[in-house]
Amino acid sequence: MTGNITFTIIKPCAVSHEYIGDILKMISAAGFSIAAMKYTKLSQIQGAYFYNVHKEKPFFEDLVEFMTSGPIVVAILEKENAVEDYRKLIGNTDPAKAEPGTIRKLFAESIQRNAVHGSDSDSNARKEADFFFSKSERFDRGGHFLELVPVEDV
Ligand code: IDP
Ligand code: MG
Image 1 (cartoon, rainbow, N blue to C red):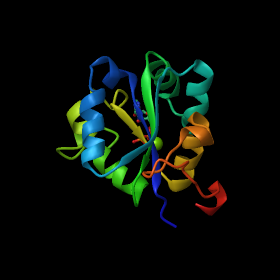
Image 2 (cartoon, protein in one colour):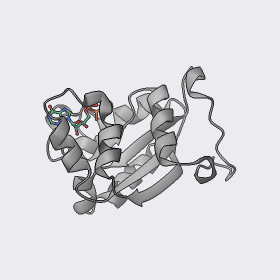
Image 3 (tube, rainbow, N blue to C red):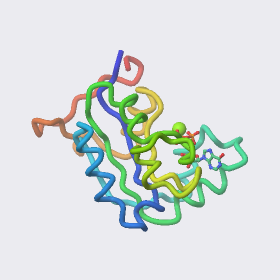
Image 4 (cartoon, rainbow, N blue to C red):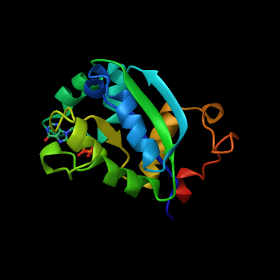
């Protein structure tokens, strides 16, 4: 089943360069609507939990240090085929390999400081959305509480 939400983070590098507005404009222009959003900062524990899948990678500790180094914007984005379409909009993990016009091509500094996070699957999108937002903080386009299907059905 193709999910209709994805989860994004505008990373500390992009926030500190004042790119929040430009990135949100691209997200909106690409047809995503914001179902939830907050300005926050990750603790060490939250950063390590969020990137737990990468804990064996050589870049893990640096990544958590970077992601906890300053404020971020976290958001749930709603659109048909959200995960795949958002990965296309952000581009390759490495900005040197990202397509022209993608968010990472335009705003990333390096493979680590690559401006934004985007979920890699429907089930991870749901888990990441649940990690940051309660049911009462998520809204559909009509302004009603966003109903999400259970993770196991995504
Ligand atoms: P993704 O963000 O495109 O899904 P992942 O492979 O899931 O890429 O990696 C998570 C994050 O870890 C990346 O967005 C980037 O910030 C960082 N990262 C990935 N590969 C490297 C690397 O080779 N060196 C340093 N940081 C990396
Ligand atoms: Mg990933």
